[in-house]
Length: 412
Image (cartoon, one colour):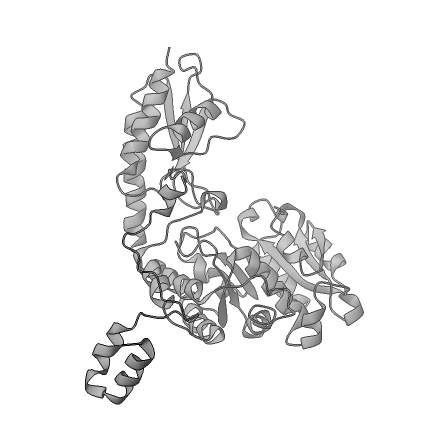
């Protein structure tokens, strides 16, 4: 029986339609049958990619963090259905806004994209002509073109703001801000992890912005934990907050969150994909990332953070006990005050007893089996740094043992 006849027969025979349908190869949207894989492919092995134990941290080049099961499930389930993209952003934005206590929120392609889109929203509002104009000749279109930022808050990521066409105006003191504000000033931007280095702190910065009726924005990309930072800066009154989703929150690495005032988020979305002719068209976020980011945030807020911190301390203790078996080794633990606020270990050795440099040790750990990445760069040639919050359960034993082995081999 030909396929055309099978379909015709199935259509006029309801009782046996299901049986007939099972005889027809399942078709893709392009008409060709889907291949039925006999075995699951291991693409990592197939392509010869190196996997490693991450004792360094949530560095972008190291693919940041690993997604938890709730996030993976959200991504996999949504990948099998068509949903209008703006509807996903609507619903996810509402839920995230509730979690972070902001007026509105949206999922972006990382914290850098959140900065660009938030800035674009401030510059254009909902004006279609202004949206099309970015990033060219802002003043010709009557768009304010200057953003005030503290000199100490330059770290490279301010480029995400400059992409919109604005000019950054550096200041150091409140008096500098007073002199810098003019009819071209669009907003005032704050980099949270540089708080201790800047002369103007959050509250004063916000007050200056309020006095001059300017939006005050903040970048907190890697500044969670603590979990309270998810809503702290919204509660303080910042106009928008940019957050990375793929670090400690363990969402999709390419996702982030822009949260803040309703009018800014609404305007940012008009500057974003799927809208064409916008500065954010290339910053596309798919439905899987949106739902995955919401699942990650929801999971993170509900997590037992005290228990998690205790787990990190236990891992630190395991590694410390193991590596200190080598004569001439010292271990210290610090917690960065703002960004990557988790236990950070420094393992230092006496170079008169242990003949190895930090880069050499890093290479040996990287090229060993299993491969391990630590923080093996910097000025001190006789120490390495590492973190434990990206380790999988039990990997602290492997990390401690491998460092002990290499230091012992290099010991005189």
